[in-house]
Figure (tube, rainbow, N blue to C red):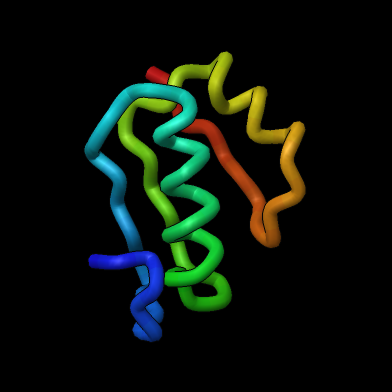
Length: 68
């Protein structure tokens, strides 16, 4: 999948890098441009500290944290 693709998806799952900068890149490029309205973006292994840092950015969607 490429971020400049015009196709929109209902669900996108990131099971890649656990690096905070990579997660933000993924959200900005795939979540913002490739996700349908009311779609679901899942980021695996997003630690609570990284999740809390998401509030610093203005994204057009809501976040929920499912910790274990």
